[in-house]
Structures are given as C-alpha cells and as structure tokens.
Image (cartoon, rainbow, N blue to C red; front, top):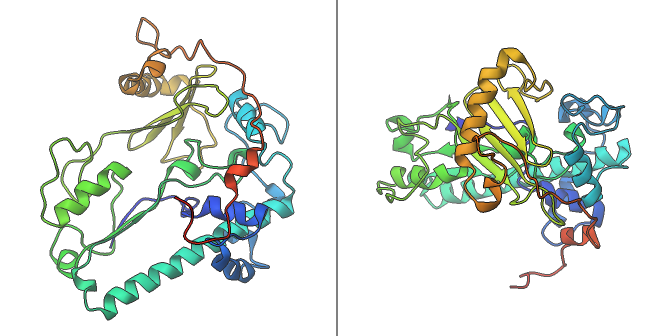
Amino acid sequence: MLCLPFSRWTLSACALTAFSLFLCGPAATARAATTYYVDFEGGDDAAAGTSPEQAFRRAPGDPQAEGELALPIQREVQRMLDVGRDFSPQQIRAIRRACYAAITHIDHQLRVVIGTLREEGILDDTILCFTTDHGDMLGNHRLWAKHWMYEDSARVPMLLSGTAAQQVEGPVGHHRVDERLVGLRDVMPTLLELAGIEPPGHCEGLSMVGGEKHDHLFSGFGEQSMSERACATRMVRDPRYKLIYYPEGNVSQLFDMEEDREEMNDLSADPDHGGTLERLQGLMVEHLRTESERRWVGEDGQLVGDPAAVPLRPLPAPHYSGQRGDHWPGPD
C-alpha cells in the first residue's frame, strides 16, 4: 500500500458530522457512530492529542493573553460563526471524542467494503483510494471547522492500494510512504493510469505513481476577504515551506514544515527566511487570477491585501446549517 503523507489530526472525514453529533444530538447519518462514542469514554486524552486542560495550541506569534487569537481576521471569523469561544474543557473533550468515534466508524465501514470485495473474489483486481475533502481544526490554534490553511484543516489522508499485480510488480508497491506533494486533482489521473486509460489533455493533476511531481501546491478558501459569509485565505506549499496569506490586513505566515509540523513558529518576519518568503509570495501572485484576487496585488506585483474589505457581521441562526433531518433518503 502506498501511504501518501497525512496529518494525524485530519483523519476526519466525518469531523463536521461528529461536531453536530455533540451539539445537536445524533441524526440518521451519525446514529451508528454513537456506539463508538461510548467506546471512547474514559480514554486517554494524550492519545488523542492536546488535552482539554491545555485545550488549544496557541496561535502562531500570539502576543495576546491566553485565549486570544493572533490575527484579527481569525477573531472576527470565529465571532461571526459564534463557534468555540466559550467551550469548556469538558465540551472540547466531548467534541473530540465524537470526532474520533466517527473516524472509527468509517474505519469499520472500510473493513466491510474490503471484506465484501474479497468474498466476491474481486479484491485482487480492485484499486482502492481513500481520501477526504478536508480535516477539522478541532480547537487547535483556538480555531474550529475547516476553512483554515493549517495542517489540521488542509492536510488530508491519501491512501492508495493497487491490484495484486500492481502491488508486487507495478508502480504502487506495498509498505511504502511517498512524501511527494499531492492534491485531490491528482486522484483522477492516478486512477486512470492504473486502469490503463490515458488522462485527458486538459487534466491539471499528476499521477501519484508517475515520475513527474509537483514542485508546489496552491489552495484557497473564499472569494472575498471579508463578507457576511466568507473569509478569504490562500496557501502555497512547497516540499518544505508553507505560506498562508490573509488578504484582510495583508498578513502572511510562513512555516517550516520539516522543523515545525504543528505550525507554532511563524517565520514571516525572520530575516533569515526573507528569500523563502519572497519566493513563495511570488508563486502566490502567479496563482491569484480571479477579479477579486487581483485586487490583492499592487501595480508593482507585490501583495497589498484587499482594500475593499468590510466588517464581518453575525449570521442569523448560524448553527442551523449544521442541522440534519431524521429521514432517509434525504431531500433532493
């Protein structure tokens, strides 16, 4: 099995469901996970990461008192969403417990899928790929949910198992870890190559088992820096460094992902890393192509932030978006 790198925090395909499980009570899609939630009762907090008593990692470069977020944009978004500001250690423990329960539930369903393929006699001819769309902050850096570019949210599992022949003699192999940079756009060309089908010419992804590799990845969330519903943030990641950019306030954060995988030490103001910062900001500018994004770039080609930012305003009934009905199938 080729195990592409994933974060210990982001094996959370059902993190938001788990979050709702605690806040709202189990809906039809989460009810089965309640059994696993009970199984995690009394578990060791250290095994699950940061203990509730130390509830959050401090935000990078935080000059504020304990409990504050380092960047105004982070404080504003969390205030707008009205999530997590007043969670007690007991609530944080329960939310994380629900997340790990949901993950365990998914693990057990994978066993059922693999077992069925084996019993049907087609497992040796099947290619398996497991991934997800995002992780969840789970309170780390005092942030919640998915729209941040820290590892907890942005880094996801990518597990690939080829056919029996591909594991023995083909490009997938087994008991391997590949540290190359990959993204969700690489899934299609990978599966097509393993199935013997030529990827279409317009495909922007690269096969995860091919010789060509990404020298960097770009990702983003939100089309405008401050609005009623969105907060823009962008990321450029090369094999060692990550640049996170917030147009609101024109703020950059730079992290050495080899030495600082928990992103606790912002190097953006470190003169020794000035060249790295300038290089990654240049790559960032190249990827800013939409009309709203180009406003963040000055005439000299440097990042200047969003001059049209407006204050965030609380949403009406902000928790309703996380509610689920108790019927199956759901509405169209």
